[in-house]
Image 1 (tube, rainbow, N blue to C red):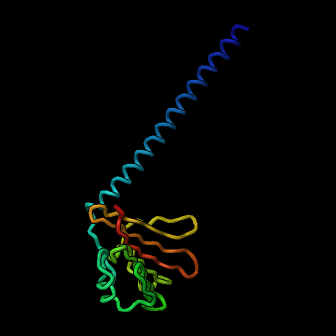
Image 2: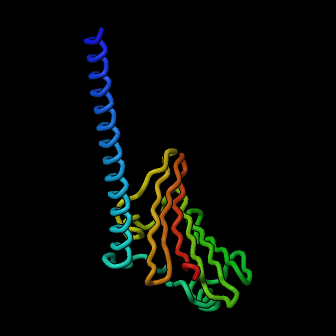
Image 3: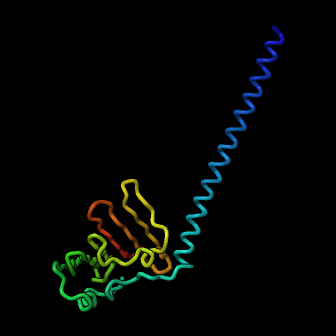
Length: 172
């Protein structure tokens, strides 16, 4: 009986040792993966701010910070016009919203391209590496902290996809 008790104890110790080692390995892998994701995020942010050339920073000559009068001089008369938002329809495939702040300066430019017709190549907007959502749409947002704005590219899923490109001032 003593032999079977010793064998049981020996197996229990081995099993416990194996379980503890397995947990430590899994924790190590999870920690390394988490650090890797954090490192990738830092690298992506660094490249967005320091290494990437700002390619898409205006739309049809309109830039963030321009006045409403300057914007309307570039784009013409909007279909819908107000103190805080102008709406333009350039074609059946291209519409634009320009949002203004309290002092009538551009804070958001958002352009929709139905079926993607006329949309710039995503790499010229946000660089490489679009992310895909489970339902099939793709997107990417890049922050340019030093420049004070972000830009995003979104392409919806479906039979008639819409590409939306948005430039927006980063709130301070």
